[in-house]
Amino acid sequence: MSATDGDGWIQCSCGNRHWGLHGAAGLLLVRDGQVLLQHRAPWVHNGDTWGIPGGAKDSHESVLEGATREAHEEIGIYPSTFTPITIHTDDHGDWRYDTIIAQAHHDLFPHELNDEAQEVAWVDISEVHTKHLHPSFARHWPTLQSLIFEHKLA
Image (cartoon, rainbow, N blue to C red; front, side, top):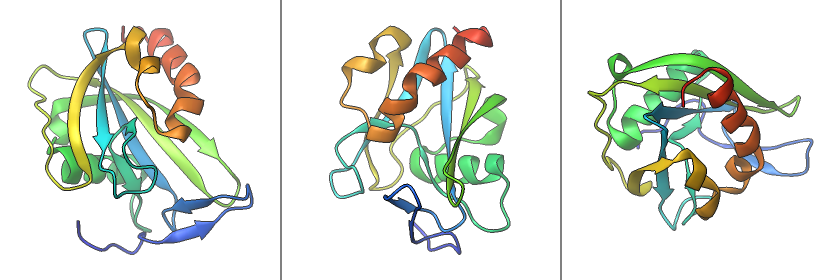
């Protein structure tokens, strides 16, 4: 993992600390009734939970650029292997996390690329809630799942 100008903690007005001085973004990949989840390494913030690849955005990056860079760094995927469909924003006023929901192409082959992920797995949409989810992802999963169905991705 290389240091970027977005790396760092922010004390949010919601009372929590969040990673990403310029906010953060992640990529929720959907294919064949499944979503791609990443089992976070124990040493990272909210470690040993399942979520999506993502992290701090740099000041010059769009939401898509930040989410794509993070997904490439963490699980080795390329922008040509998915099509962005919609964005869900968790906006705290002074910090935000943007989740890009994307249709994964059949040539997308993720793998653990750095030490932030223990494992990646395609999980049936109906089974996501059975995983030990990252707290923020768990809180937003019902809305994200609704967006997946709304956009006919599953």
